[in-house]
Image (tube, rainbow, N blue to C red; front, side, top):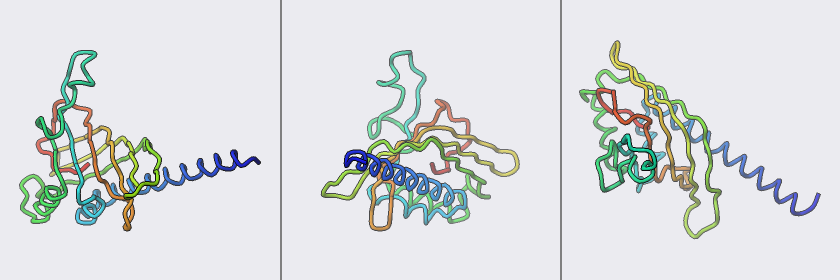
Length: 187
């Protein structure tokens, strides 16, 4: 086997191992959210996280790239938050008197189609990669309130001493009109 073939094989194995590591990270995140272990989930987020879910608009053909989604920091959004706000949301749920989460919702996160878009590279700072995934979040409240959220996430993941953390998450829901009575789930 030539040196070039050996390097290619080694690179392919590294890519597969990284893919599996990122999938395991997402599955652990889903487990924490589904089990309502929100404080532990917060540990999976970088201190400087950007957590953004734009509003989606129905636009004319050819105008999707320019105006289908609202812009971070400029337009209204479902979420345009950082770690502080996410921590406050978790604390509010933990009080037991959150009007939209008493009793707590039953939630399941399904994560699929994980793609590691950028391979890690050596820089002066921590290793970062971009990963995309699709999700389906099912929520049942009280006796008969059911919501299904479907969409795509694009994440910037950063490797720290404790492992991977989400440094930026952009969530695209596949609905322009939200039919749920509230939006208290985490994506």
